[in-house]
Image (cartoon, rainbow, N blue to C red; front, side, top):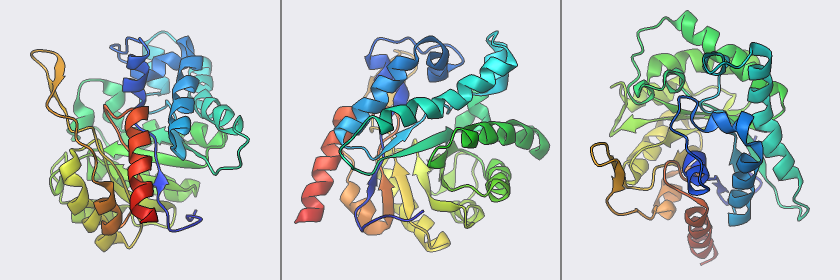
Length: 296
């Protein structure tokens, strides 16, 4: 999948924070995936808000959706499988409702194994499970998502190069386009592996862009430069807002950081957006800022 022009593909922002802003409590283990069952129209409303803000991609509510996770919440396997696939159909229905002829995409989110555990290990990696366990977890879910016909997969927030090896192998077997993004700490994955090694794992034909998400904005440019140098592919970059979570006081602190996305583009990013605490208004501002830079 290639870009139609030299302009970047603008991604959406965080799904969970946008749903919380609409009044939803996402504190249970299923997180935003619970609303696939309880309030799918609310997920659709968030997708529409991001498209209306100028995003070109809707990322589905499947990041934390898995058969195992739904079964733990009392959902039968067949219904769990239907709900996972429905995440794509919800986004596609919203996308297809637009009649202005503008190109819009649906990216089916594939979150890390640790997201299903809901214990914070999605930000650490090193789960202590075998490659076979990871394959058995990710493979069927990826097949369900692909069966619902997204434009591509968003393999995202991967903290560990070992998990990346499994996911990249599955992408090659399934032969389906995807972007591949790690969660990082400086020049390493969250599990501590050098980004040069981690990015190299994703340098396969099926991966259209390699990069990072769910990181601090000031970590983006060096990571993008490394991803492009290692893989020769366009980069994907969608960091958090720049705020930090105070676990004791249970609220966000610090100043929201306006992403310096023009610098990311100069470094080789072709897909840019936001992750945690980035909402529709932020994406609208990003679209406006990039429009001014690119039209100058």
